[in-house]
Length: 144
Image 1: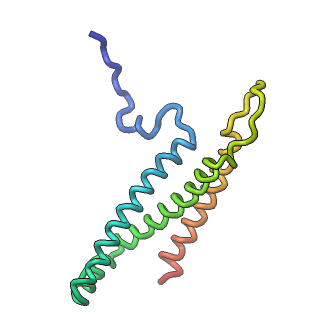
Image 2: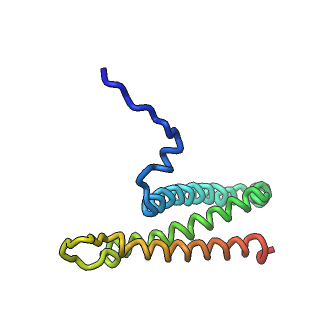
């Protein structure tokens, strides 16, 4: 009977894999942010549907959602949307072939498409971080 290797990393091994690169982390965050936006969309439809119950039902539902916890949740949805939108643009241009680079003869040192894609990933993630910070200022400081 063959022995199975022990998982020494546990749950940490899911996220901190040995050969993960920044593109892999962008992939994971893109999936998580997409699921978060979908959950928000479903919750939004439920809350908007409460208007059918009349003004009393609407005001009671909205008073439940006006707590600081839900305000922070709205900010997280904004942050997920900012990241998801900009990373989606990067993926869109990558799929069209604009970020792949021109084909070249494989001569050492080898150049891969990562050399063309990664700078765009870094630029767009810096832009997403700026949007998230400015959005946070609007949510908590300027919007009050």
